[in-house]
Image 1 (tube, rainbow, N blue to C red):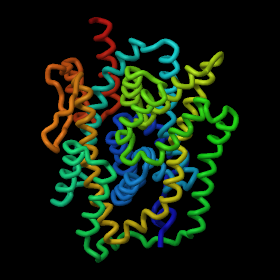
Image 2 (image 1 turned 120 degrees about the horizontal axis):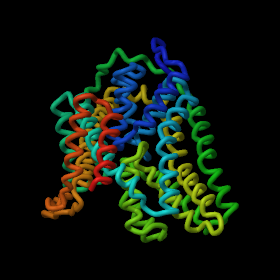
Image 3 (image 1 turned 135 degrees about the horizontal axis):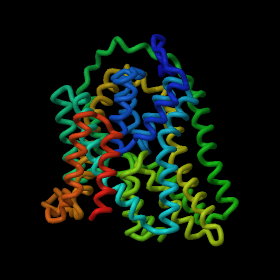
Image 4 (image 1 turned 90 degrees about the vertical axis):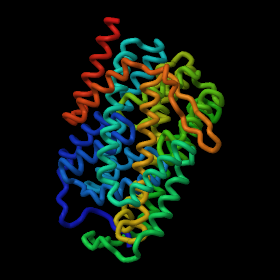
Amino acid sequence: MPQSGPLSTFQPPSFREALAVWTRIGLLSFGGPAGQIALMHQELVEKRGWLDETRFLSALNFCMLLPGPEAMQLATYAGWRMHGVAGGLAAGLLFVLPGALLMLGLALLYAAFGSLPVVEALFFGVKAAVLAIVVEALVRVARRALKRPMDWAIAAAAFVALFAFHVPFPAVVAAALAAGYLAASPERDTPDVAAPSRVRLGQTLTTIAVWLVIWIAPLLLIGAIFGPSHVLSQLAVFYSKLAVVTFGGAYAVLTYMAQQVVEGFGWLTPGEMLDALGLAETTPGPLILVTEFVGVLAAWRHGGDWPLLMGVLGGLVTLWATFAPCFLWIFAGAPYIDWLTREPRLSGALRAVTAAVVGVILNLTLWFALHVLFREVVPVVWGPVSPSLPVLSSFNPALGALAVLALIIVFATRNILAALAVCAAASLIGSMLF
């Protein structure tokens, strides 16, 4: 039966010590899911041993199967693993809050003054540093996840399916699950994993009911106060729907979301949507924080005499609708992860997902690199194959040089802060001189 709580031999850190680490992770969580997952592996597995390799990868596999930002959910699981619900809340909230506060401030400034040259110059350099962080993260994750020829084959197949054929992410994960399940031995090969203890079904159902109320009740109150046609109510409904279909993280739904925001609701212009994505890619926290930018601008423009207040409320509504469900998925499902790990065929299926995740991260890394280094990326159709390729003449040499500098810093020192600071400073000085 499923289990709950830590191993008997595991000594968790103090809650205060864990809070300091969750804060550090939240402040340094640049680079999208690839960089964030690698950062947590470095902090939780390599440096401190708070999670072992098997448990970390098992939790990552589980989070990849859930809707929503997998890195934030992985942090929530790690916090829950050590300190229960309070630990999960602390880890998940601190993963999101630094980026959310920064995004709120930038979105309010943008709504009031438009794009800010100084901010643009800083984030120009940050993009190059983030690219280096993501590349280094990809290398580290691949080294740990790809051990067998089958792992490499699944990772390669996942990348080709996503990059060249645009196969939906859920289909890629489903294929990996099936391949891993069928190839796995029915005999248990992980006797060192502690036997799970029982989790009652009633406990799981209670957790689901509580978090459904926490998620939905405030949004229903918004609708009751402002009416169903008000922009805050529309934000609540739209992003609550997105929260349950964002399998594969934010990248999987960005196109649909951007189209609805620009063409469906008319909340942002296409240029503003691109600015929002650029800010989300170069600030800490999940990429899905782009929803907060949209919520701030949409509510600001419908705020009448109180644009600032409405902008803040718009950001809060989108944050709540986006992230409250994540706690529901983790607190209801986390007690079952060790049970899944102990079942041989299910463990094999999850291991295959780990390999597929490397292909997913490679696809995200390439996508990010192309959009950072080239001003123009276009789809090229060759029969059923339709990869997005750069227009070589649109290469940005300044960003290319900064990216090389960041790669040297990151691979030589593994110091994320140094890479971010040097590239941001170089970009700002360059913009002032030239």
